[in-house]
Image (tube, rainbow, N blue to C red; front, side, top):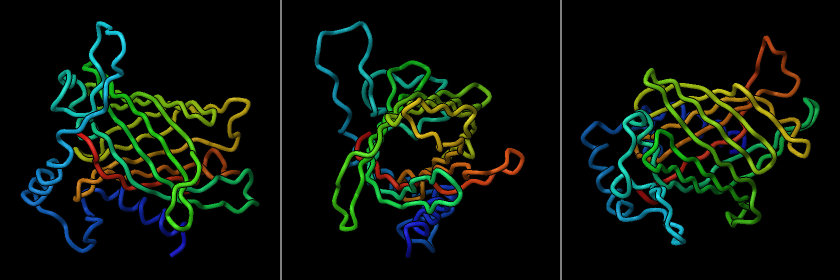
Length: 244
């Protein structure tokens, strides 16, 4: 199977997060099984959290990625509650071509994603990605992304993200259901040294029946007309909760 096929398959898993069990493709967990699986998995993660800085104290609580510790989650964030935690896993990505005539290049990556809060009405989003070679070994750092997620009383999601490659993006969206969320670019800005070919896109995040977090990012293909946007796979991954 090619890397492009892997990317498409991971995209389908994220978009059908409540309909596909990645550990057993032909079996859907019922409600009781899902609860039991979550309880079993939490035995290894419930005691883990991101560390505080341990420096001079400030009159604000430390960020927490564990809902059992630290400040209470703000009531306005209940629609995003399942995202809180530390997630880690692997995925597939495509280096977007500068023009339609160029062939995209595929690569595998590892990712650690920390989604935390400090009791205020936003989630902090912090992603670190590294490249993986054909033997499954980590090679070089790839990119970092940090930002904030908010959700309104009418379930309108707004996300601000800054990427280490020289990108700033604003995305809006809404929950697909209580375990999946879709956001779409409203503004994508590249710095002078950033990737000029990185166009707008859309993302889907979803909890799978095995309680892993799947996500997919699709971008507008180079040369696409504004009135006929064509999205192509850009990045996708499946991440396992390791803390929270």
